[in-house]
Image (cartoon, rainbow, N blue to C red; front, side, top):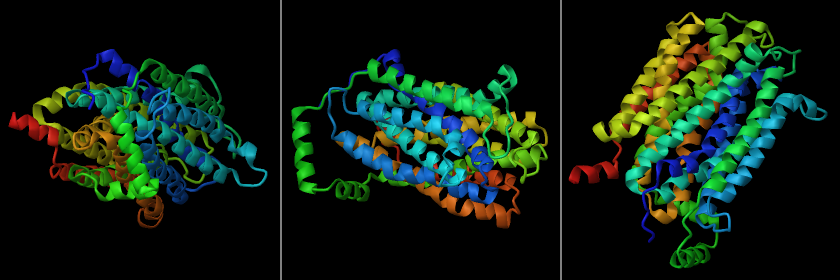
Length: 448
């Protein structure tokens, strides 16, 4: 086995830098996909159904990419070929999604927009999953919390820039923020263009600045034997799923409630803020009031991502003092309380306060589960298990996608703010579940 040497701060920075570009594009999707789809004719009840495309493709793509990247070795390395392919595909999707109305000769624009959302998320997942595995590949156990925390910092920076860009282009640069019915405003379109360029350049930085450990001859021979023995990659993925580590199963409950909550936040914050805070008419998504609300949601999403970026820098020190489980549990509670408090807010400016809590939760969500998980995984299975772990992210989103819209329509009487309150409660439940997770690295520290 290759002994993983400690890397310098800038080596860890370079290997994680591509995540800035990925999250730049992901933030544009999160903050703007709902209003783009509403512009193309989707109503609030159907939004969650369109968003199912994202987690569904992630659930399919990530285990496959993880499985094959574990067994890949080329001149470009093991994980980097997947970075490159995913970055190119995501950039193309970013260029096409806000222009879906140009492709409507056969299919309605909202279905083309939904298809672009699926393609974009599949491409992001092709790029994202190997980045998680790369940290576990190259860093020794004692540096993994730092590695995932630095990834979270760069994710936060990229997300701030991506979330704020439509507002900046509209309010500071003067690009139009309104358009005719069925047309996406120019400030959103140009934001997606810029996002495509930033994403691919950031991923290129990691590709050309990071070296991977070549596999040992014994590892290659073992992989070939296992491939011949299994005869089918799908069978091997299913076998690995059945034999997943205990820690991973326990984290599954935490992830379920966490990502059920986040899906509600991403899908319903724009209509919740537009109606509950701005007093907009939910049926008139092309109004100036609704567009102002959508731009402000981009700003507050940027704030929670900025908070997560700063908070990530403190995560290694906090985790070293109180443990990774307690760090994650406390972070989730703060985020849950923040989301619930949005119901009691009547001024857009005060929405910045709950975003501080959500940012603390988001910073931990992007780092601590992976830091806890990595210590329980066999080295030669890191990619596949990181991919399978994505099931616990995508399945709750799919479930929310199926039932979330009808719940808002039938139970909450189309008042999306209650979906945000429900999300806050789910984060608090996830915090309770954290206490039942076994963190092997923390156990080793206690024994020492």
